[in-house]
Image 1 (tube, helix red, strand yellow):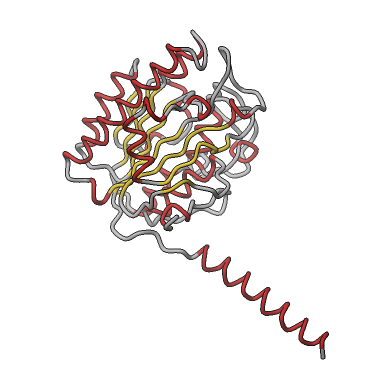
Image 2 (image 1 turned 45 degrees about the vertical axis):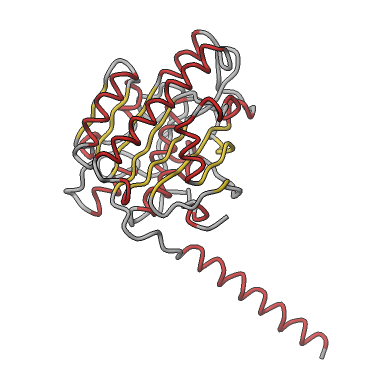
Length: 302
């Protein structure tokens, strides 16, 4: 009798676990999200964040979900980690393995119709070919990571100040998905050093860019149906990065907007969760070759 009761209780426990997993996987995203804006700052290391100097990122943190422990893939370098965030899969799968890769260093485990690993832009256009997509960046390495035919406004400029100028104009088209990339923090890290006064000052300047983007979204009447998230690709130390150490590998993930609940994210957050999270919020399909999962806890009260 005791053995039978033990078996029944174990079966109930397993059923509960299975049901809980299914429920999490089927969790609905908040209704009414029409736009997702991704702000990326290269080299903006989580270990150097001083919230008191960053009022706009603090506003996003206080009104949304956040972590300073989003983990890069290795090596902790640029091209492969931006690609990882764009395509929801680690470098072993998409094939970009070096700092400045302009094509996969290893044959990708899967390629779409035009030879690219499916990105968040792929999924936006798969749902609605008329959906507006934009991307503006000041490091030309970004432009090799996705199919540009899927981006309506793809603009490479020479400085982060120009990125802001173009991005504010792009937002006037009210894109479904926008990627806004600033490279200046990384430039200062390499030229002067991570954690130096000059580096911290460039983080503050980037925070100002964030504030102007948030203000533009509000000015355009998009605040109530838009989610904004801020990430970086890596941190660093001295004048470099790429090593297997946490000050190189941990980046901020801060997400703010319609339906996002305030509080720190305590779940595990690899950076290949970025694209699946954006896709989930926009109601897009997630291809089987993605390996990240949505950060469901961002819509739960903490």
